[in-house]
Image (cartoon, rainbow, N blue to C red):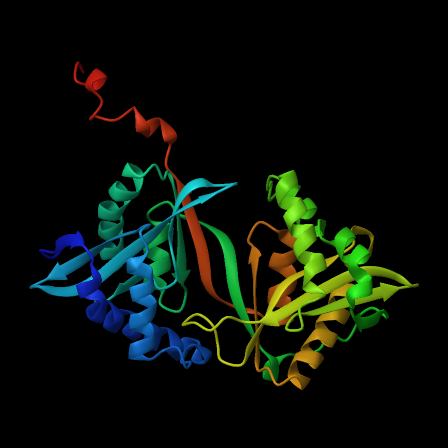
Length: 336
């Protein structure tokens, strides 16, 4: 390794961080042209990094060589129901100067992880870009595993399914509140089973149900229902994608989709995909974004088959919580 100097990044490093991030995204866009979007502008990138660093929960390190910033890694301290205290590296939270090795990410993590552990974060998560294999290699060699896949479908390249089921597809209305209430737990129940083993919290299910029903009142949200013999058997929910360096221009987000267990693997999802893509094209969108849990076998099979192209992973590792006391700073260890 070169003779790098590591220190905490501050507001004054934002211009240099922005150059590194824009360089990373220029390289990413060679593989994913849709990432060369309107958010990839110096002022917007600096503003995004400013928002990241001015957040009181942001903790990160920079690597300097001859007083030049050549890499950085920034995590956000988050507290949630499922993960407890967690340090999350957002998509814009890591970048290296072109030519710097993957090993530098590992050294940056070694410095930043100490700060995160000091704040009680034993779960570490990172959004990892995929065009340059350097980032995936680095986080994989830090014992991070893939949790979530983020992907984009180019509607100009979508190939409709030929063997889709014969179901009625219609747009849901406020009169479908009860239907959406019943549909709201489909994904949670599916991912509670093997091999995802995601826990179900009753208060979270209640919030999801309320959100599903409230979506019918949002004019920017499109909910499609698939009906068979007058019964709702599946749904798609679309919303305008939030702009950012990870999101193509002219994109709509497929927020969530599901099919009743008894109607899976019989073409209902394919029929909904055909109808959804047709409607989104008519609305003027060019891209659809979505994400899925890697351990969800149905999603991991169906969405790539539909044409979605992964552009980033969310990866995670969990530090053994025994480290909180079983470390050499504990006086009881001094006798050994």
